[in-house]
Length: 300
Image 1 (cartoon, one colour):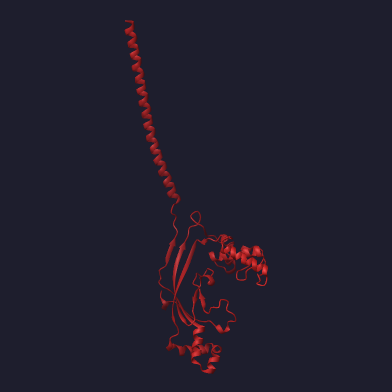
Image 2 (image 1 turned 60 degrees about the vertical axis):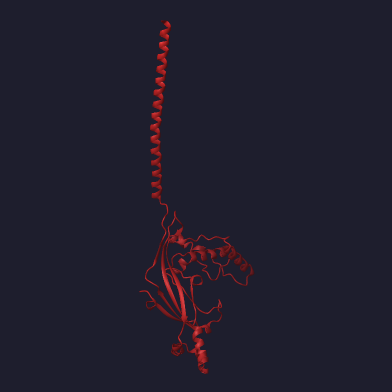
């Protein structure tokens, strides 16, 4: 069933006090709604959830069916996809365009810089038997090489053959938010959170600082609900605009037209030849008779 009451509702502890160093400098969580057999890429497709907020995630499903060669280009066979996407063998997932692009990026770095990026897989079928070390920030030569590769890819000087998959389920998530928790619920939530995470509230409990405890809740906890907006889904099917059957039909129609025109032309040509021949023969015969008559009159 659809609607928020029939979806998945979760609470998340961000644990900001336990984070040694934030890579992005942003506190929150990222959620990705995807098919169970696809590789999630939260850094690319994720929806950001904010702390101290009730996050409502509405999900819409679109099923896309693309046409392979000769109408278009899409990946359909596992053997072909395994050489394009390293995540297939690493995580037992199906091919994805993003996975192919990341694999291509890593392949260029391995081939040209003789090292591997730490945030992509470096072992797998697309890389052959290569066993290179990770690229280090302290190695100026490797860092410069990686920067050149990334610039060349961004400027499309290095291209990656990464078509879409032929059959794909795309989940689109839209988010709305409201303040959480309510003032009337704050005290009971603080009480429950103290039981679950006593170390998080240790300093504020000693000082009996209610405002500090409220800030801890708003900075470290969030609530999210993920649900289908409705049970209908969108179907996107590619249809050939010009098929082989239509081509044969058009060729047959044109041949029929030209053959019909040629037949009538041949009949008219034969009729013209016969008419011209008859007229010529008649003229010759009349001329011969006149010559004979003139000759008879002369002898007389």
